[in-house]
Image 1 (cartoon, one colour):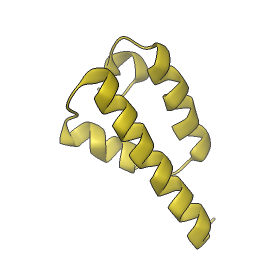
Image 2 (cartoon, one colour):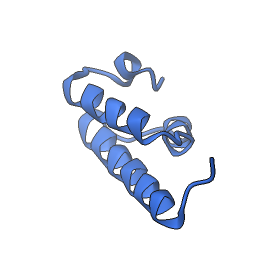
Image 3 (tube, helix red, strand yellow):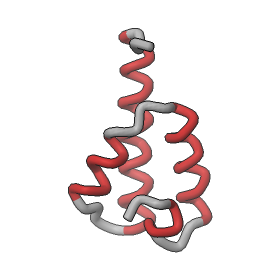
Length: 65
């Protein structure tokens, strides 16, 4: 299913917010982690990772390393 323009902007905003959150929580992010987050197309998955990031002690716990 193709995303609408508004959905695409929403997803990109969620990806940027997640990358910011991960950077604050875990320090500088590798290019690999950035690419993995940017490759997530599901808003549900992005929201799940945000919730996990709030409690996780590492990127490994979230499955991003």
